[in-house]
Image 1 (cartoon, one colour):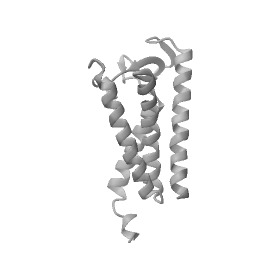
Image 2 (cartoon, rainbow, N blue to C red):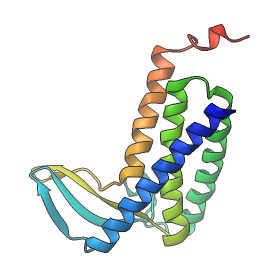
Image 3 (cartoon, rainbow, N blue to C red):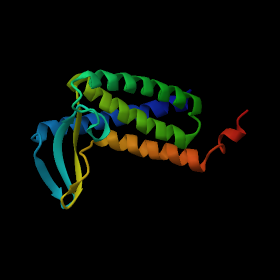
Length: 161
């Protein structure tokens, strides 16, 4: 199925982009020190052994394997889902974004034991937790999946036998 392959190629390219930016961040930034970019944006290298917003970050190490298991299962499911809907561009794009982001963070967990975060957004003294491009891909993909579910529900499926 050619479209399916293209969606997986996109996810693979996103993994590469994510990993290259993380390698650059690790090589050019000092951990836990801000590098000013704008009044609301800094680079700030940190390692997150937990999930989003450092959920379970201090759990003692077992969470690494738990999150690896969840990511492998979720990526496998989403690849199957893309295979099933690869002719539907929006949902396939959405899933490709989430797959690419999830694999990007999975690579970090497997090889480093934590996810490399380096983007810091803030307004004055109020900071959003640091994140990376993989997190951005996942967020955009999830929002597009929600968009598809709310606004396109059944429209594409109604034409299928």
